[in-house]
Image 1 (cartoon, helix red, strand yellow):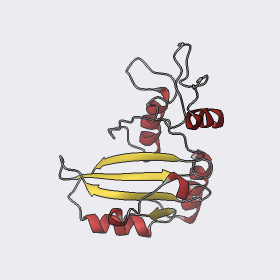
Image 2 (image 1 turned 135 degrees about the vertical axis):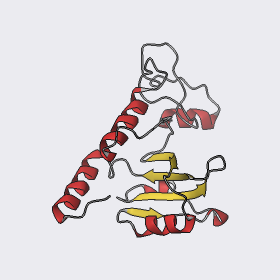
Image 3 (image 1 turned 90 degrees about the vertical axis):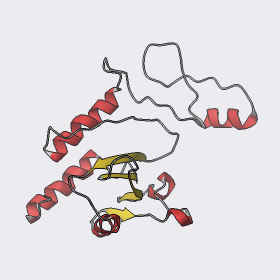
Length: 177
């Protein structure tokens, strides 16, 4: 990606050679771009990574009835996963209470002051084990809908670290309900 970045900044032609994945001859510039494909497309139009997110969410939550959809986008950052998350809650909620619950949750850092341009950024999450949550807002189309932006350093906060933290909660007898 460094060569691509240097080429773009110099006004030179970019010769993409890596992404997206697959046997197609089309390759895309990574530098200064957002590519809405991570892994190979499946018959249903979703990518393998998007379907993995759907399956893992249901597995982690222990509820096959949870409705999940995802669009995964490759963004050229050094470290980090960023997600725009939409949740439909069972009951109405007070937005300030939700923010306080998140602020008090272990392993979560609430960064939610859009008026002062304070929200989670991949550059701020890099090298830190917490999950950063912000841009919390009510959905405009569904009264119990909640939108948020979530960022974490995927090298520190991933499946292996999550498994360790879940095991620690189980061992301590503190279960999330």
